Image (cartoon, rainbow, N blue to C red; front, side):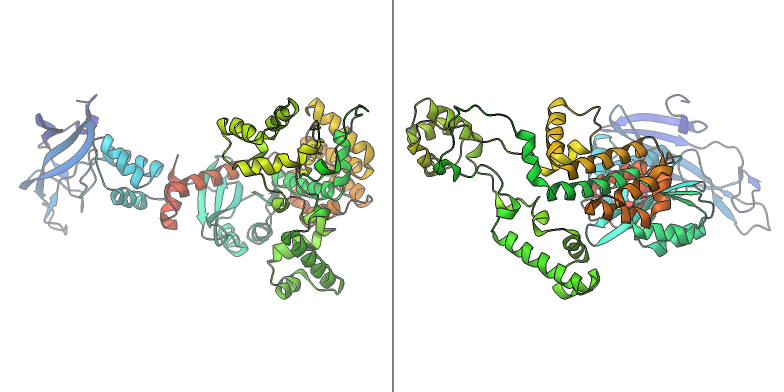
Length: 533
């Protein structure tokens, strides 16, 4: 009994029998005196007996039901307010419970891991069927975990409803466990929590200004540490803006001496689109609107208007107005916008069409049937229209190589030069050889990477001074952001703490929200965040 049913140890087992898909256990308590819950006086004088019905964990895939006979006893202490009291079995079940403690713990674990509906489906397989609402009630009834006051606190926000409502998660960075979930992401809420929990020495956060303000007000003596990943990401955005300004130099990455006898493209084939249109060549509706809006924003900036006033006058979000204000030209805003080029269903089959055409097959119907057998789902007319310009040629020349995308070059610049692939290194060196601006940019990036990798935050001021002395507008904007948060940035580039653990918990919160289909209230989400393993 102690091995198979440790929670029944001390009880008198009368019968165990199988009844269909259920195992029934009849048990009763002993005859030893029991202490009164009101005064603690031992009593063995029986008033009456009654039976409790408890569900237990399954045996061999069968549901277990325990019918437990307990006593009601007299309290012989005349000063006690209780005349009688019911005998309890604390190792088996709680007062008034209809399930054993072992089954309650199992159901709570299922509910915390899977939620209501999925958890209820699993309990059917565990021969302990309960409804989804029962699981949710159990989760809500669980007490909050008790944590010691953290010395190192991690702070980050997460979306309750993206774009509308956000919450804040607080992590003990030493134990890597969540300790609290706040209802919003304002500075006042964080400051109030920190004032109520004195003793935080280090606060790890991203670059959000609200958390910087809240930590400064609530824990003025704590050291704020800006996350290195977010700093590196901000630098990457500045690098991307700079590369976009000098995208004309990217063609050097594919420059190679071509044989003189290679057939040149005729005017007919030159009109066939082979890739994205350059930003300065785009005349679509989006490009026209972007150029007009950029001109309006910079005209208002020249008049001395603030970003807030510009966003209000033009009906733009503040972030959009700020993005237009920071752009050196309208073409910079069109670099990553793919509206000017739409992928065709024929693109994947164009190399085959070129090969078969050069082999001498110029029958459009036959070529259509060949690519259709390989999965082409477009029309025959599209094939004929594409092939029509080639009929003036005896041979389709190989299409010119496209220069690398802006983001690809950004990844080359921000990759460790010791680990970058050889072909990427050659392409980057070709670009830097023809663009002194991008060469200087790469030098600044690699110098910053060395500071961050070696944790030499003391050298940050020297690096920022070097950037200020160079003609790098996007990096100047990045440096201004660093100076506004310089103490936290220096700490982030010096200390070993970062927000990686916090980001991992935010990712887990996204999974929990998807499990709950976004329908549960925040109190249930909070319990699952704080109590899940």
